[in-house]
Image (tube, rainbow, N blue to C red; front, side):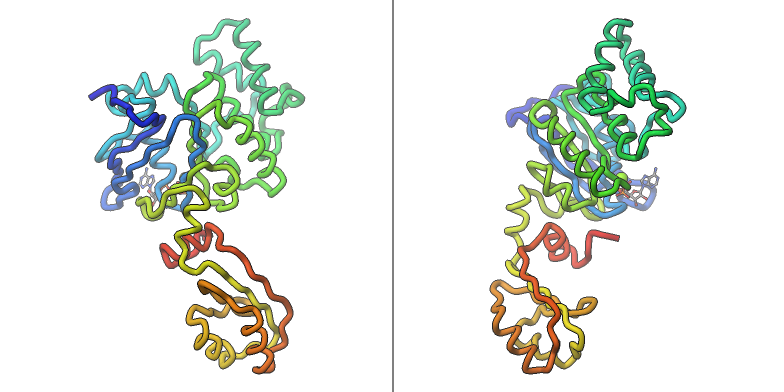
Amino acid sequence: MGYIEDKNNFAIQTFNITRKFGNLTAVDGVNLGVKKGEIFSLLGPNGAGKTTIIKMLCCLLRPTGGTGAIMGYDIQEEPLAVKSIIGISPQETAISLHLNSLENLELICGVYGMSKEETKKRSEEILELMSLTKRAKDRAGKLSGGMQRRLSIAMALVSDPLVLFLDEPTLGLDPQARRSMWEQIAGLKGKKTILLTTHYLEEADALADRIAIIDEGKIIALGTSGELKNKIQDKQIMIVKAKNLTHEAIEGLRKIYPDAREIEGGVEIRAKEISFERIVNYLHSEGTKIESTLIKEPSLDDVFLQLTGKEIRE
Ligand SMILES: Nc1ncnc2c1ncn2[C@@H]1O[C@H](COP(=O)(O)OP(=O)(O)OP(=O)(O)O)[C@@H](O)[C@H]1O
Ligand SMILES: [Mg+2]
């Protein structure tokens, strides 16, 4: 097969790609097409198969069924061509903690056979791009978690890859570092095709042009964040926090809104349309002391909940 004809401008394609580990099917017949220049997110809980897909696409792990292609090159038949056009920032950040930021980058430049001048120029450019210039001479082990992640992405960018794989780029970062990382990634938009995995819904929502929700090795939904949220039948969600909410009151609510469910310190009501007044009046008539109310639009979390019956967060 080798070069797969690409009529649709796809940078990444998978064709029924599958990976079994013994009896476990970690990736189960996944079909994806990531367009050139797109930021595409694989969103799913722990163990969904995200890293396994990335490893296969980066030729680090062989599929046990199906295949994939990067810029038309089959990952199994043209691994050298594939490796020459991709960059990967793995989930377990692969930086040398005893080297400084600059030395880490120089090491990768060396792997790509760059001259001394090229190495200097490229390292400086990339440090600047990932806002690490000031920390060039600091040992990687002394950088914050967010900076280490940025260095890991910097290393993936050394070869100026067409396609960039970011496996959980913000795992374990605090909210501020996460947001700053989002800005860095958004800054690459249009310059690279990016496949990023995450189990943070907000991250996929904020960054990705399109999102594939993956669970137990299968893609269960795919689209823009808006398209995914439109899949939800219950368009409105109301959360009522109340002190003395009784089971009887919740049962009564269920007669009006069958999907009302008890949550910590209150009740959550989902429906196509919610009457705020009706709910408040009913709860008052039951003697409930309402502390707060909130009506919200469905989030990707709710999409996942509806599709799988479970929450994405562990
Ligand atoms: N080398 C391996 N040998 C056996 N099982 C494996 C191996 N690698 C992954 N698995 C299993 O495959 C499944 C998918 O793992 P994978 O790492 O792809 O999930 P993930 O979506 O990346 O999860 P996380 O969000 O925790 O990173 C898991 O059940 C995992 O235990
Ligand atoms: Mg993973």
